[in-house]
Amino acid sequence: MAIDPPRSVVLKYDQNSQRLNVQLVEPAKLAPFLAGKFTVPILLDDFDFKLDDEFARRLGVAMLNAIALGQPEIKQYMTVTQDPID
Image 1 (cartoon, rainbow, N blue to C red):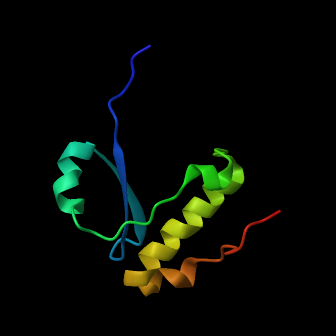
Image 2 (cartoon, helix red, strand yellow; image 1 turned 120 degrees about the vertical axis):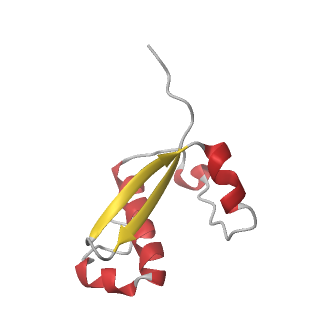
């Protein structure tokens, strides 16, 4: 089985087309653009190394909230639960 090379994921909201775009980028090519930028670490041990449905949901909510900081018009489409769901 072939293994793909490591990739970084870039998620952006295009207001003109009203869509989210996901792009896969080689980490080495992205690194110069990220040098010195604000980073929010997500520590897997805080989640007992469980990348389950709830983790994915919370990660998605965090990504949408991060986009909404700079593009608040996307908030009109967001009806997500901000807090963890039991």
